[in-house]
Image 1 (spheres, one colour):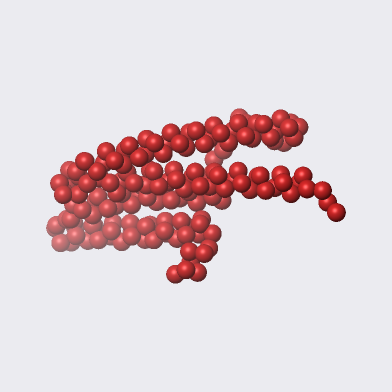
Image 2: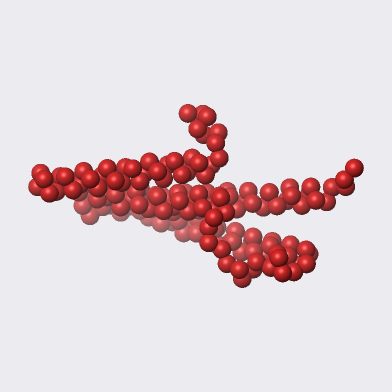
Length: 166
């Protein structure tokens, strides 16, 4: 187990997404068998299926961001078009804008999660909706960690470039 966790975080997240997709397929199959062959259904299956989709989306977004395969805008992408000093300033401005957006998302995600602890599922009044809202702050925390990691990598790269070569 420790060897699995020592791998890149994106591998762990991708594996978790794969397991959730497998669970989703099995639950769909079970739901179809129960509904059409046995003429009964389990309402909680729909809850778990709906919540699993949210987790898959947020974990997949974390994987895309960690591997820098996510969508990006060329609005602030002046690195190739301008000189080094202006490109560095634009990079840091872009970094702080993204950081501010992620912090706002984290704040709203935590509020939504705390609010979900009070709500009950319409199908089963005993189950709260925390499972559905938890991926939101968890996904943002993963994005924040990756965002800070990109800053540290850029800082290390700049320091290596500035070191005098002997």
